[in-house]
Image (cartoon, rainbow, N blue to C red; front, side, top):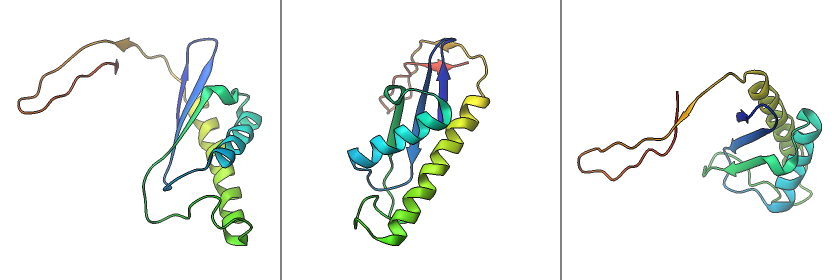
Length: 112
C-alpha cells in the first residue's frame, strides 16, 4: 500500500497478490478500509496482480475457506493502509525524461 497526501486529502494505492477481485468484493474492501482509515472509498485504488498461489476472491461463493481468507485479506488491507498513512513523509514530484539505448521508456514522475 502506498499512501499519498496533499495536505488535505489522502489517497491509497493498494496491490493485492491475487488473480482477480470482483467489483462487489472490491467495493466491500474499500468500505472496510474507509472504516479503518477514514480515507473515502473514492480515494482508494485496489489492483489485483496475477498469481497462481492465492484463491480467487468470491469463487466459489459460500466456501468456508474462501470466506475466512477474504476476512483475513480485509484485515490485512486495512492494516497496511493504516501503516502507509502513519508513514507519510514529505516528498517532491519532479517531471523528467530519460533515454536508455534500445529501450523506449519515459519517466513521467520521480519522487525525490
